[in-house]
Length: 105
Length: 415
Image 1: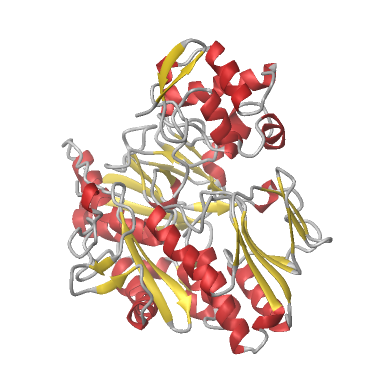
Image 2: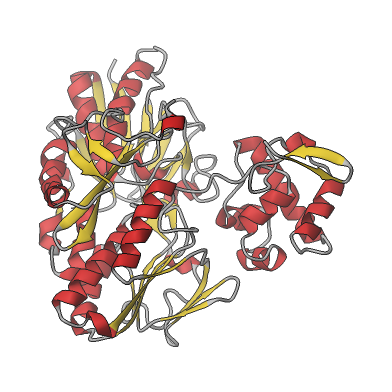
């Protein structure tokens, strides 16, 4: 497994840059991860989504889909795409330091 | 004492579960199946309706008649389940108490969830073949269609039978060629996935087939709006696909009553379920079969069929106070119609992706490769559905567990 250093901490990630050990994550790391993905500032709404992602991962063992996130986070799907352009489920999972969502088959 | 088993849903899963349990338990159990209507649709047949290759009367039969003697059939919509009281409230006012509840109400289409989808153009320019009504309306529209842009769009996963939209494209290519107008039709496959399919080996093969047939592949397109009046699909990140005719697979949810039943379903009204035992996570006496469950399988009839064996065993064990059998392996088996009287077959489970090779062993039919034999298999399957699968019999040569023999495993992944 490759490792990367964020906010002075070495973390384990997969080939696509998703965390494999969510415990290694911190809020400082998230800020740096977001910048790397082109999000300059994490707003209150960003944090609301990031915390919901981590909560769902802890409960269910996988991050939610965009549609489920739209129903559970209090942020509409349209807004999710504005907050995390190109793919909220994957991008928010990456910044929230949880493994890549399994998605559907 | 006679145990009361209530099965919600008289489709593939509910019917085969009722018939298997009746055979297993006889008079020891009182089995009641509930459904809102009496039309059992052979859903794999819907794909063929728009092309005039199947007709509604070929694919619909009465639900009650697929159930063995001694099984009760109650026709009503379900209002809600009170999971704390082990009680089902029906919309006709009836109340059913249960020792075991089986949720078999599948997945429902929710076109209203997508902006504009049921607005102007719905059922005149924008169709779905995932309902009988939609498939019939689409047949008429295709007959009148003499050229232009056709977009086949999956709004979001999960959907029933994830290969069906691809099959629709392959058959549309064949259909327009037969009519001599293929060169006047631009066919696009517009998907939220990053390739033609979810699993890598199959995605490559199916993506290659799209290219070979001149079907444009548009990936990572998350449909935010369907503008029927303007003939345009718009994604959440503001990409656009123009169409003259759109075939849209709307988002799916679990049945409406699941959402109304406190504690039964997840955000999308699917029931959280143990993927190996098929017992729900919400209550030990609630079991789930088929598309209604939140488990990482395809939502497909073959999965439901393979689940039937484990489910029946586990309900019997649960009633006898014995430990459950955690042996469902996620087995899925799908014929993929590829046009020109050919089809492919894919066979996989939780751990093994679809691979090339032969099924069910070295001398069987080819996997992930087009053949006439697979097309005949697909056609023959309709007969097996009514006469073997629904009555709850095993299909000869096709076991519940996925066969490993005959598959070309990548050397390093031989686990």
